[in-house]
Image (cartoon, rainbow, N blue to C red):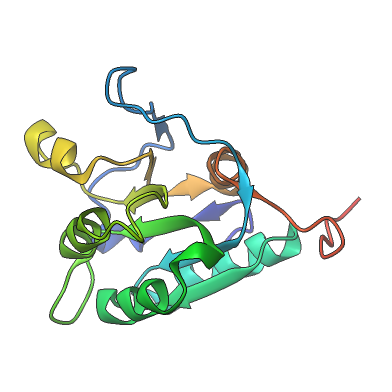
Length: 166
């Protein structure tokens, strides 16, 4: 996989655009200042999840990962204040999918303020998408630069940990 692109294999790709969806309309948007903290990467594909994790760590971010929503929920419930951002795939194995994880996150006052950027290769109906109340959106496949631009809107890297190539 090229280092500048992270995506699902072609046989599961529903869209091939490389765009970032605009943030919710001003009426719905909550002002979110970038903050320090870990980024929770929730993605079932090991190669995609580990690729995202490696890129984020290379740029100085602290990362926790989960291949399913149940594991992600445990991370969030254990220490919600330690997270600056959730990168969330919607199609996940197990008893909960990304939709259910987001519902639970938003319904829990300790976790509701953590912004979530949805990463998906599918295009949900507008009403369903509205239910997610995403703070950002990445269509798979996406470029590393696009991922980093979204992450920087919500999370602050640890400058001492960054190993960015010159």
